[in-house]
Image (cartoon, rainbow, N blue to C red; front, top):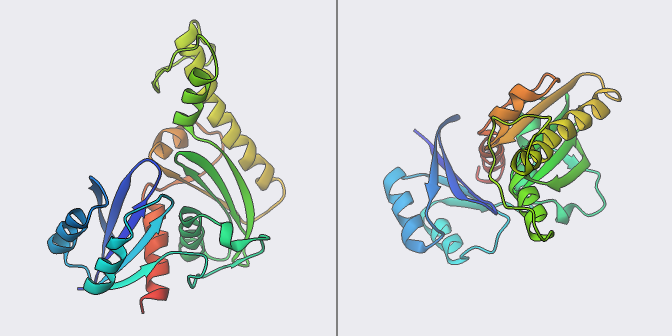
Length: 242
């Protein structure tokens, strides 16, 4: 059985995704990016292939370790991918976006795909039915919105998300929750409407930790897949680690 470990180092969490052959098996949360932590994961799961996608300043020594112990690939704009990019500077495409685009092409081929990643930021990634990444947009994520209103005003408190909020809010806390959470839902629906009006054969995938909640709040039909980024990393690993 072939095992592949896909490491995703994001702004909020460090995590891994384990694949056995082509099947996603589990998510692995990492305490840190120390050599000891990575060695422990490798010892426990014994992968033959690994891939790393990082949007943070990580411990580069782990790349040497992964290359010694496995067939390793570090995701970058130089990686072999299953799509083309029409954007002006392909080297500026984040590792997380590369993975989401690759997953869309692999799992929803011959469609116009909009992949929406809900993380520290919200990314909108549009891939044509000809497997061409045309661009999209980036906006602040949920925690960033809450923090910005608190840190850039004198009196607004820092509140936490609570899914049980009224859209027509009645106090400061619920006003902030409505503005952020309902505002995000309206924003996402607006972007989907924009693309849907211009492209047929259209598919939408939402991924990220809060995608399950937003999937139930949107008026548009979408696919929610928490593991979509891992699936994209696996697809890129298959191309580069063969």
